[in-house]
Image 1 (cartoon, rainbow, N blue to C red):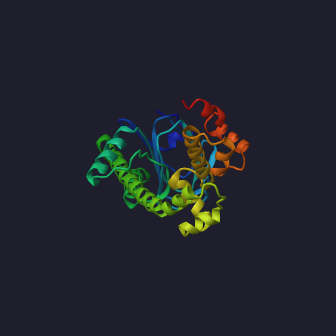
Image 2 (image 1 turned 60 degrees about the vertical axis):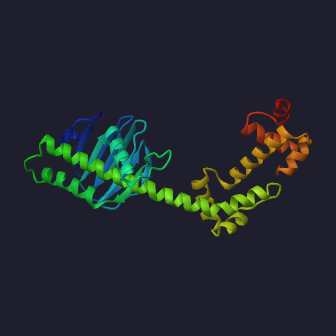
Image 3 (image 1 turned 90 degrees about the vertical axis):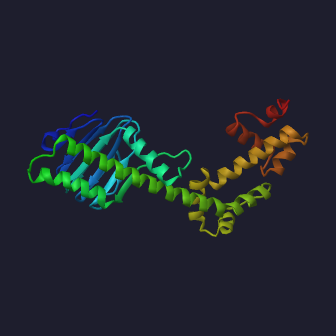
Length: 285
């Protein structure tokens, strides 16, 4: 499940059923997360100089103490860090996390559709920090080490608390998305009614009562496309229906749907649908 780094022997580590827990001393360290495993890292001090995932610097230096990072299961990743304080890390499979998530969603009687866990960086959670401090405190003071049952219980508590936090994030994101969708309905109606016309980002943002920058970011998060991409896809969808259902000249359809010319519509169709408008019309039968 893991590859030990050069200073692993200086750290406390425990291999449980489906997980590995490590107490890290201050200093530099490296850990490989196997494909298909989750990773949680609870900071008990202030991180210094860098924190890199797969060679890409993702977190800023001097990150806040008493916070945690969660990376959901993915491909194999390598983490490098230089720390000024202690930390507790855990690599674990997806079964326990999935079961706990399902239980919490059922208890709340709501589950976002097509929900997946997302990475969490530098989040505060006193419960997770408390569990990690208890584990690290025993090792730092050289007291009697917890037995396997105690460590299994601590690992389960960490996963349980993480699962709860993930469901909170999911429901917050779902509420925000629903609110944004309602706010954007006027924008979507405006786009549908004005496809032949040019529509600027400022114009659409003003309908949503947002700044252009904020509007563009929230629109992409809510709709899955930038405003420009969404308008282009709507023009393609309407033009596609007109090509199939009418005998109007292709050039006229292009202008009616907001394309600057027939050749422009052809280029967009080829990139979006992989066929030209002419072929689509020919094959409409």
